[in-house]
Image 1: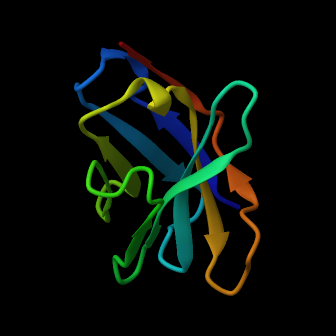
Image 2: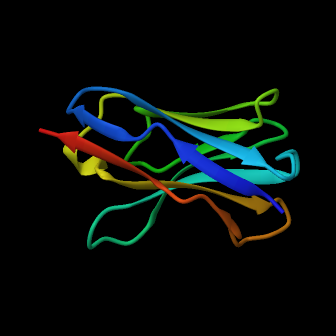
Length: 119
């Protein structure tokens, strides 16, 4: 069983940067895909970025491509989301989640961290 804890959210001005962290415990990530999701008030949850832990392959939503970078630290068992050139529309609760490579459903979720971008 994987336990996930996010941190790093906060308030930032448009154009600024934040780095979110997702620390895992209970089971190493090596056979997992980790994703960052976000959900803004009144909107559907959006998959922002994913990383295949063992090989480092990444994917991004078009809305964040070129501005956000997902990465992982093997030693710390942590996944990061570096967010640059933030826009007010990036305001949301950000969640990290994990799924096994052979599964389509993300079953392990963190508690979420709030990101607010002011204009």
